[in-house]
Amino acid sequence: MSHPEEDLGELEELDAIVDVLVDSAPPGSHDQERRHSITSDEEDALSAAGAIAVLRRGLAATPELRQGVVLTLALAVATALGKLAVPILIQQILDRGVFGKDGYRPGFVAAACCGAAVGIIALYFISRATFLRLVRSAEASLLGLRVRTFHHIQRLSLADHVEQRRGALVARVTSDVETLAQFTEWGAVAWIVDTVLIVTTVAVMVVYSPPLAAVAVAVFLPLLPALGYLQRRQLAAYDELRTAVGGTLSEVSELVTGASVVQAYGLQRRTRRRLDRAARTQYKAQMGAAKWFAVMFPLSDFFGALALATVISVGALNGPAWGLDLGKLVAFVFLVNLLLGPIAELSEILDQTQTAIAGWRKILGVLATPIDVTEPENGITLPTGPLAVDFEDLRFTYRTGGEVLRGINLHLPAGAYVAVVGETGSGKTTIAKLLCRLADPTAGTLRVGGIDLRQVAPESRRSTVRMVPQDGFLFDTTIAENVRVGAPETSDAAIQSAFDSLGLGGWLEDVPGGLHAPVGERGGSLSVGERQLVALARAQLGNPGLLVLDEATSSVDPKTEQALSEALERLTAGRTVVNIAHRLSSAERADLVVVVDNGNVVETGTHAELVAAGGTYATLYSSWLGNTRVLRDD
Image 1 (cartoon, rainbow, N blue to C red):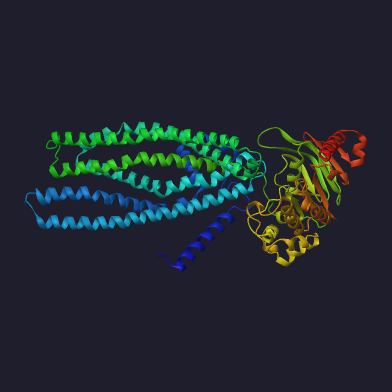
Image 2: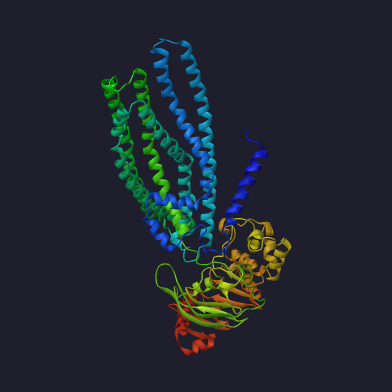
């Protein structure tokens, strides 16, 4: 039974490890992303690397696994040597205690048996210590790897956090790390102990009889190239399997998240087909990997039985000529039998190793993804009050596909209410995310308050530039905790004041539990509009000089639309506002309308000016107005 003090100490130790792991890779460290990630050239090389290359890179990225390796190896050697004691003692008992020149010696036999008993007990404790030592090292390394991988994923830009990759990224931190856990806690121990046992057993065989040892080794030699071939095929098969697992998790993640849409539109059959397709792909990949294991397991058994039969036959025929007496021959048979265990175990270990290497390769692939957004070491603080925004030949490209933004030059005056409009896919939402520095331009400069956004201190940027997204994402905690996510030390009184300043105090009073009301997973306990109200309070708390709205009222229920509109009016007063307008009613009252088409700014001006100009905006407005009238008539 564990003691509470010990459990607390263990938890504090783990917390300290996590803090060190995260602190060891701070944003903006001196050698850009060399600490635990690798360059894009190395990423390409990694995808084609063999098992040894992946192991080397994995060990380099997991320093905890190398700690105490000398002690672990010493314990493994002691474990292997302890297993050799049994055949050696049998030989000694037969040759010196039973069939020796002095005949049967009961005292010697008893002493030898007692010595064997002591050795076996010692072997138990040594084996236990070896296992615990390696498990502790493995768990510490996996903790470090999981934390570093998650930390790296959190720092990837919006170019990497696309919908189809989210499930795969989850798989890297969960499923793939778990394959390493299974390997490091048992497979790694078996590799060390079995390798040492095979080498030392062959060495003892050579001492007893070099010719018979050569016969035994010769029988096993054909197994080596066969295992090498199977290892390469297994590695490729398990690499496909880990990819398939990531694909399945992507589908599951998307379908669970969109469960309400699936039910509302009766898409169960279609989504089931998609999930079935992903599951069948994973099933085929699993069976493709299993067929190599099915070959390997009986292959090692076959060679083991062949070696045992050959040694007994050859030893019985040539034993006297080669200087083998009865005790050595019996011991030799035991030694061959001792070899069968680790050799037969190789198939299962190799199978598990291939799974782990494939998972490790996927994890290293995530760590190989370069961080596009790196924070400055000595960042500049943004000025207070409304801020001007300048785009200077700004361009942006995702990792796949063409340019999304194509050389934008634009000035947004301080304190202006700016509406950015355009067709779906024109690039307007990307502009919003660049303003919050969720990614950096691939070319050109974005200045806020006259300062290149890449040179701004992260704390200053996060408090001065606030974004209210369209979906109003909330964490599964209370309203208060969701508001204070950007400022953990904020008091409940300050949060209440933020709601009151937006005219939302009455709404909050009507919510059962008020500030301490739980919002549920993704804010599911609140309506879409209510989630937006909480998001507005979160933005208000930072007193931003630049407010970025991704059309915060585009999908709001009528019940809260009026409260939200009034809160938005208060929130935007005295600030520079960039509103990504999906509904052109937001553009009608804007000081400046920016029209984006195919990644280019094609028009700027007021609503009235652009309608009168009869260009792109006028066409969009006319189309929107016609659709609105149709909806009203319906």
